[in-house]
Amino acid sequence: MSLDTQFFYLLNSLAGQSQLLDGIVVFLASYLAYVLIIAFLAFVLFSQYQRREKLQILFVAGVSTIIARFGVAELIRLFYQRPRPFSALDNVHQLLTNNEWSFPSGHATFFFALATVVYLYNKKWGVGFFIASIFMTTSRVVAGIHYPSDIIGGAIIGIAIACAVSYFSRKLISTYQPA
Image 1 (tube, helix red, strand yellow):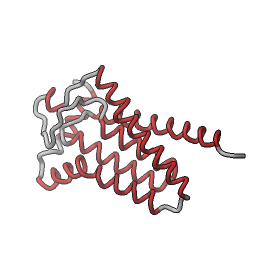
Image 2 (tube, helix red, strand yellow; image 1 turned 60 degrees about the vertical axis):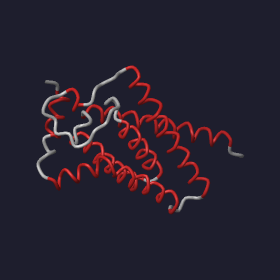
Image 3 (cartoon, helix red, strand yellow; image 1 turned 180 degrees about the horizontal axis):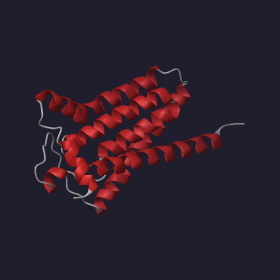
């Protein structure tokens, strides 16, 4: 049994232990995403940044999350079709279901890209977004719909894409700003 599968079983063994814990896991895995989107919008709208900077944050976040989730992640899934743990393994405590391929995690690619963008503009808020993204994506392993490597792969993709988009966005803006 691979280390990835062993770690999956370790985390997934937390599911089915209590209704309260299962409810928390389902909330974190399914609904924390909506809270993070609202928190991101609040971060942008109510921050002290100038209008131009707010638009830049929205642009970088939008482009990063779309490329990471709907570009790179889907391209990988086109060529590498890894079944979900509940489909491939025995004795999985399944709290959620999903019919897409498992690798990379779409949630991880999207929310780690978003967390990276927030971190690049505001370290304090960014750390909070990273912590929330870790809780969300780890809960998806506990819920039986991802392997740990799906989360790690998605996080790496999201972070890398957000850093690249941010870098090129800043280069583009500095190129076209009047002297």
